[in-house]
Image (cartoon, rainbow, N blue to C red):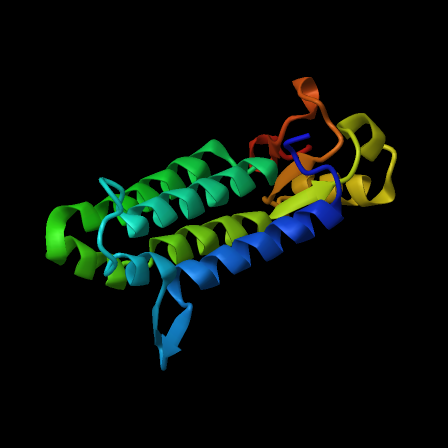
Length: 176
């Protein structure tokens, strides 16, 4: 199954995102600055027509996007990540200046942080919406939404589509 269905799977996704972030943009740290694998690989000569830095960057970016899909990130977050990662991946193709820019542009870190923040701002319920409706936590959450005290996204991990898709709760009108 592609989508995460438990909090353990979400924890593993977070760990994977952190590892990609560190490897891609801070494998060698010097004070507040770091050099990542994509920048380090850009100094290697091409293998035929394949640039090792671009290849690594594209694969690491694809893994971040895949983890975003698994965590059921919103389409807007995925589009933002894709744009950032595309710039980061293609920069070295513009000669030495592009490779230097790539070394300073931490696109994988930026995208990873965007996704991790989005996941942190999401409330995940294991099971379907129908199952969650019977829990005290869900009823408390809906009370906070109706009172205007809660505006985070809610995702039901057990849903297989249909009415159990991610819900943006701010669109639910306050009760009364």
